[in-house]
Length: 517
Image 1 (tube, rainbow, N blue to C red):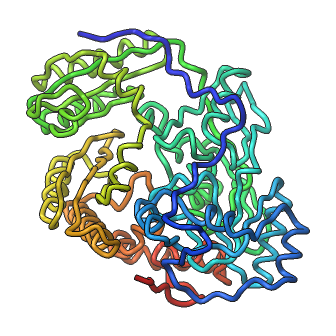
Image 2 (spheres, one colour; image 1 turned 120 degrees about the vertical axis):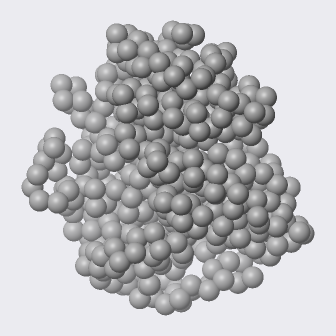
């Protein structure tokens, strides 16, 4: 078995607290830009803004409002290059305590002003866009580790804390790690992870964010504050913590989080394999996972992605493996994986492929460069049971390539579970012209083809990117009658439709959303 022991992976080491993502570039002075979405809204009164300023640091400056009213949804980049933003907020506020958050929410509820929660704004589906304007509450000033229960491994942390700041604080003083390393690790926050129901690249070992959250402090839509409990494996009725995980700020505002942490791994091992077909590699992964192996990283790339970045020749599929923990456990895990790979006709590959991936795993500059050149490029991830993985992978790629202008469709498996896996698709298209309408129509056509094909083949709507605006149109199909339950929960907790209105395909009491083309 060709594997390589290494030192455990270390997170980035910032010299100062992490800052939010870099601003998106606009094609003109921001005073000339227009909003893409048109919705009913009433301008904030002078009295309301004055009261907001009394509660916490706030801003109505145009540059601030533009910057804090977006995330990294690819369409937002295309719009910005055409002198448009999605929808500007009317004010930005920056609370530093739960009391301030509670007071801001209560003020908005009293005045029926919509409120959208934002953090690092690294999302890619438009969840942070305030469709009805109003107030954006920037949570990044509510940051830091409050306390650590070293015996129990529980970390009390504020939601505006960025990934590197959390991990460095835990590792340096306590020798602990949460183990959550999404691609957006450097520019995303704890609250954002929970709001989008995210997954890190080591999720096969540590789980998704769902598995890491022990409890939450939540400000509800009327300004009241609740705790969901931090007891292990509680059974005090339904799990209220889970209700807010993935709610994208539509049910409440997260103001405090308790996360489960693990001792920093003392050892690490890596391995790489090549397979003659995607199906053979999928079976090896399934067999390993079903046999009890849960290596931190188990990533399979199809023929196209393997050739592009992982040493394949165009006919091979690369499987990268990394595990960390106690040496005796790692040895056992890696042996189970190796047995499964050998049983499915694999060949060992250069273990340096794992290091290459580790060094480039968070680099998305290529996507941004192609977008600026007028190409349509994006990713779509879904999860599906093992028995349907191959069907979903093939049908979605085929559906994408039927769209006029499509140039490439590829996939990899990024997260694995006992019953299935996450398939992560990447697509590139060249619209018929460089104008914004052609770009947007091509983007929508590919998403419609890809997402509907995935749902047709038995996959779900999303694995870790969330819903936002981009996927909202598929929500009713994905949930069926359960969407009525989600709507009922929304308006039971938020009867005035204050929190992030217009999302999840829930009809807003504030009216329709129209698009200015």
